Length: 236
Length: 236
DNA sequence: CGGCAAATTTAGTGCCGACTAAATTCAGAT
DNA sequence: ATCTGAATTTAGTCGGCACTAAATTTGCCG
Image 1 (spheres, rainbow over the protein chains, first blue to last red):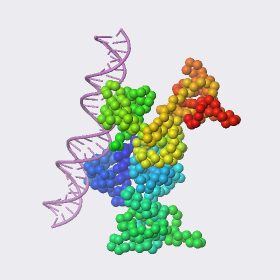
Image 2: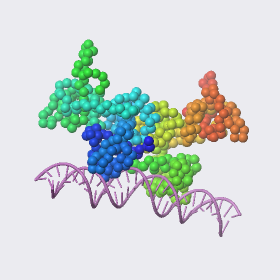
Image 3: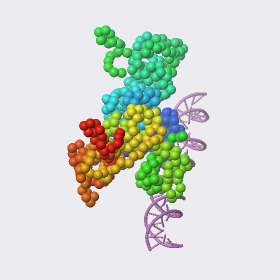
Image 4: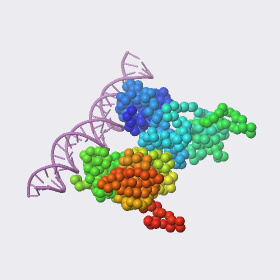
């Protein structure tokens, strides 16, 4: 159970992400995600295969072994706990937490991980709305429609925003389109035009690209009697 | 103003420490402190010299340049802020904060440094009692006698404990010999024998080695009238 | 089925920072 | 002034992880 290098951890995390989206990870996709050349990725894949963290057959892509997946989830847990901690305890702007967590995650001990999780009350989601794997490696990915797909004319709770692009994130933050915010889709311009949304009593014309990165759930509306409409239950 | 590697930062920090204690740093002392071979240290010293962070002439030891000192103090600031944060905000045991901070210090952005400093209210000392360099690189080292040197029969405030040995630290922690604690030196056995101290109403026989790592200041005693005795003033 | 473009891998290099072994320099004692 | 042991440096290696350039494999299309 030797400590992995930061580079290895980055690869495992990336492979996990690609597997989620596409079932398996190709050398090229991995290289693009990690901003390295494909040759470098090949190299590392062999190393990870020797460590039995991935199943790798040449020209055929990779998959995490269960040991590899376990490691990946640990790192993702570190990352997401850190993001939430930075946001919540230290009030770091949302668009900056990802990069910071990316560096810190590799230097986090189990001990500190536990302290942070405890300080946050064992949270289930990071500030972008991504689920945080449990200590024993459980992760419940749920699918939500993006603003681009959701029907107009009703209220939605923003449950997740993509953390891939800090500039986009900063923009969304300015508009108030962050997790936990409530948004109403007013209308939709045709031919790839913007989507009119209302949030915090302000109205914005949101482009397709941005809309694709905001994920929502029909909001729980509480009537005068305290009964609910439109969704079954609970958190997120 | 490119980012230094973690290894370079470690060397700068170590050189700074040795310079404090001895005026200048030798290759050997550096190697011992960093747990590398002397040949490795020589190597790195040349590299740091090329970057104008140290003045290095072969066989003659090193000194930090003012640029090097500035960097060293930044890193020490990171380290000590982290130690205090881990202790204060996350309640990490005192003997564990050093190692954790040693890893995290290299991954800390200026941004996060500022947030942490603000959250702690711009503190002046870390949990071992070491002064924290200011953002602009000021550091006030003050000398204090160790328990081994202090006169018996009076009360002392513990202002600092050495952070060099986690096991020793853990031991001191168990005894209650931590910064801010008040200790009374009862007596001193001759011929290198133990020192009898009282802390929190418990009495302990403290060996020479341990006593050398605990630094104290005569305590401010507040009389009924609120006047003071034995020391001039303020904090620490 | 053959041919070709894209994806991938192999081969070889460079930088970083550790190491060992061998050479060199320094400083203190005689 | 010289000798000698300790400290230091030099020379050469190695593992980690990136890179480029050159092979190789794949899969698809006609």
